[in-house]
Length: 229
Image (cartoon, rainbow, N blue to C red; front, top):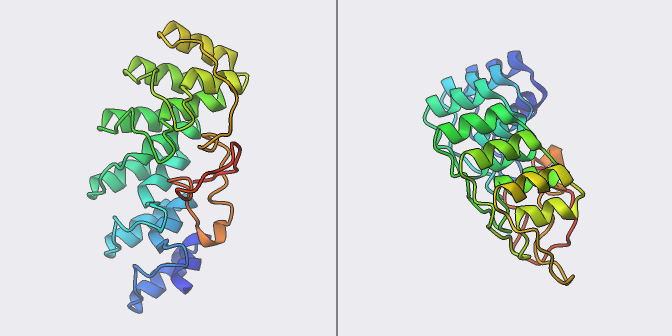
């Protein structure tokens, strides 16, 4: 596990030493994360490049579907996104949600321009527009609408982006969505099925690189969880 620790802590010299010794570049921790995923998570671009050039598998996923590309999107690292895609990493559907959730407009733009599915709904039905509405990111919301994001989609609770905005007192976002055609509806309160789109709780144990790309499991979840994909 020395390689995993060195990659996560940004110890480029030690990573190189371990590579020279012939260490397995694709070994994983208990969550299924490789050194490449951990380096991307911590935004250690030089280590990411070193691992890739040394033969690390670009497409390994953690137990919850996390990838190096998703971590780069989460950090809003355009150089890392571009590098990984240039090296053959496909743009998975969760990368855009990660970038939008964390307010990385330039990463959102780059991903959309390079074919990311703008209306992809993850396990609980959340889209990039919904997570941006939740956190009140007007720039990301405006861009996604401009690029044709569907304002009528509903998550597994039956909530649309405008309902999520209203629930979180994001009046400016709700106004933008209304102008884009969203209906300012309400519905009776009942037990929630899907967790709220942005309170990341799945990656709280960063040492295990637990991912929340798919918001944990198929079991019913509380309305507010703390995620951290």
